[in-house]
Length: 108
Image (cartoon, rainbow, N blue to C red; front, side):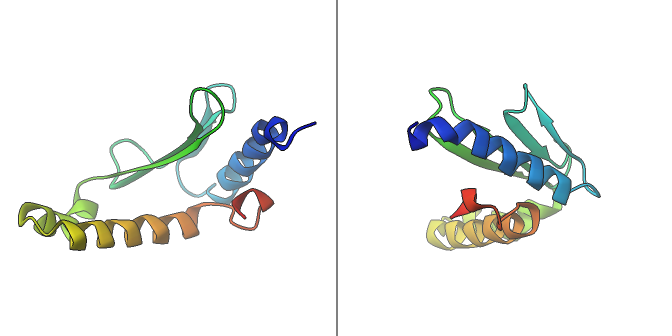
């Protein structure tokens, strides 16, 4: 068995553990266990994690809206793209550390 063949099982376990870690938040696994949602579409931070079509790449997405985006919008609107990117990446990392099961071997 190839390591690639283990990817869906490892991803599902990672998604399940991350969902359990976020029981106090709105977290659910949808689409036959292939997509993890954390938060609501209307909330300031909404995360999605899923296996991209083709099954080789995992995508982590965050939607930042409302009060959450106010920290960054000034830099975007002023054309300070490096600072905007730096703050947005730091925000993504801080959120991911809180939300995901980083102890899972899948995160190595």
